Image: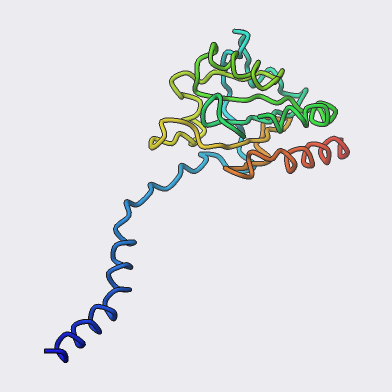
Length: 80
Length: 103
């Protein structure tokens, strides 16, 4: 009886890492983040959007005058 | 965005306009800009059309991936930074200053 218990115990110890590993593997896979549709060297598509003062801003209006740092954020009121 | 505000003088000196984009309403963006003390335009991409066109709409969050595109005076994309790298404007500032020197 004691021997059987000891063998069982050893089995459990031996299997524990496998079980943990299997559990870790079951985490839901995060979908891959979206990759930018453009690469360096591509021409940016033009757009017109409203700024916080309800003024229209058109990307192509900066053409020949200024570089544009276009910073997309996740949500307003979040860091970064 | 605050980091861009802190670097605004350097960016302006290097002929660069900063434009923030968020999928929130103009009202939300106005409140946020005021809260952050930001005085460059924060554009409202309500509906996400522009975000989708640039390929960075994340359906999991129903929002954009944090991405900064630097577009030169010819309208060409010259730098793309995502996530953590997009938050820190240092690389963008350096790139703009280099462009200014080259003329």
